[in-house]
Length: 327
Ligand SMILES: NC(=O)C1=CN([C@@H]2O[C@H](COP(=O)(O)OP(=O)(O)OC[C@H]3O[C@@H](n4cnc5c(N)ncnc54)[C@H](OP(=O)(O)O)[C@@H]3O)[C@@H](O)[C@H]2O)C=CC1
Ligand SMILES: CCCCCCCCCCCCCCCC(=O)[C@@H](N)CO
Image 1: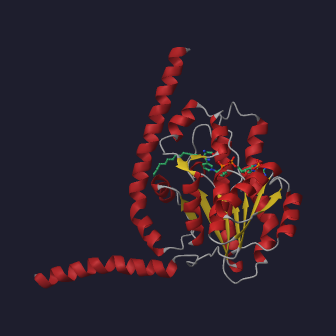
Image 2: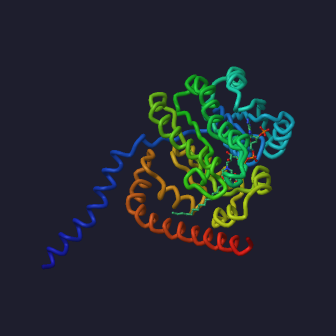
Image 3: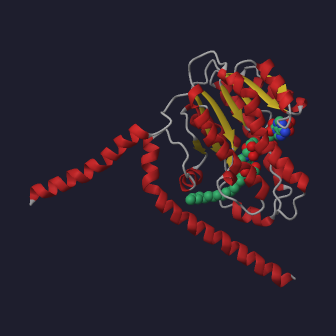
């Protein structure tokens, strides 16, 4: 009797170990470390908000840093602010991510790149019906096509890097790139597109030892966030606002840690970590430990997601009733 209990217990204990070892064998692409020190990091949107904090951290990691944005005055202000806080100089490049030619000129001038971080982006939250075609196109052209253009222009510089360490292309998406939210139709579409882009590119660029990362910030205090709040519908605030607002420093710290670990999906807080698992689909997962956690949590997190969705629709229904009363 007692021996059979011992046998059952040891089989039960061995199963997770066997599963873990199997996951160690199959987790793909293989885990890597991506160093920042003494490497060239180019950051689009580096003059403001999350991109600015990323530039600061990259400098503190000992990287040589270039920042790219349109407005040269703001770029130079950022350069001064970064020099004041880190004692280090960045190179600035003025270009529009909508313009492939000017991005290619930057690539020529900037030289080889080891880590490319795309943090440029724009959000104009409004209902789809209230959004003009210009606003819709502006978001798609900046957030989605802008990333395709930046990567198109910079890929030769990543392949040209001087060391044998892996390179990284990290794209700042959004939690609105994992779940569609009222008021973010075009924005969400532009951010969801980045996931397909990153998954496909991870397969294509594997042979060049380039790792893709997607960063999924929640609402974050930045100049861009202040601007989007000017047009944000009340319902967007109610539905999207269940999450705590992060600081740009915090988001940048999570992003740099994740990029260095070669993570594909980078969450920025606990809700974001759960959201990442609930919406993971077939994303690559280099970490066996994370894969192990995902297998056991995905069902529970789907249940939690269903409850949140339920509360969102309750909010919607209440809002619709209130509107009917006033009409
Ligand atoms: N703040 C938030 O709540 C969240 C933000 N995000 C995402 O994080 C990223 C950064 O956001 P945040 O820091 O708030 O943004 P900010 O508006 O503070 O900064 C945006 C940066 O992108 C640059 N940029 C914008 N358009 C272009 C363009 N066409 N060509 C080149 N550069 C451009 C801006 O410079 P310039 O205007 O001079 O070109 C600026 O440097 C974005 O992708 C955003 O979608 C995701 C989730 C939440
Ligand atoms: C299964 C677990 C679920 C956990 C909760 C998930 C909550 C999701 C809320 C999404 C809010 C969208 C924020 C968009 C931020 C953004 O991109 C704008 N600020 C634009 O700049």
